[in-house]
Image (tube, rainbow, N blue to C red):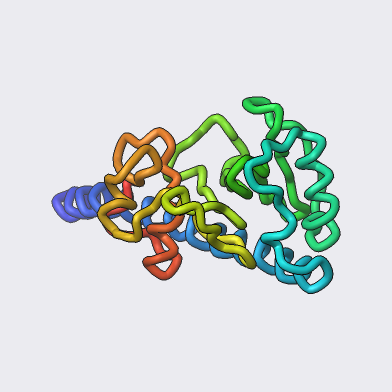
Length: 201
């Protein structure tokens, strides 16, 4: 009985950690795949359509139909998608499901391209475990230069380049209780696409 009790205590202490580690591993694997999938599509598109920076009309707010037209021109021919629909929370956003089940939100806004990957497909769950933001041909927000002109990268709009700013700097900071959490993807990328120990899980 004592042995069983000890086993029970040890299990109670270790199983939650094992579950958390497994959940983090799933996120890391899916994020790496998503990043690779979109960048592969962008590279193929660039080979045929030229510099991605020239695709986007800066300071223009695209409508839903214009976003769909952009996707059909620059992304859909190079990526296997199942379907797309308007996102319920914003009529200019396009919600896309790929053949392998990947689900993400896409839009071009006045500063460039915004992409949010939702692991569970729920666009209302803006949480560091579920929503991960990316960008391309996006203005920096600091000096209006354009970042990521030829690739998709984690969201860094208005980032000043420091780790402290990613964690505490502004509305996109990745910290416990964050509501936007846009910089969380960058933190994971900087850690070799592994979730850091101090990540707000």
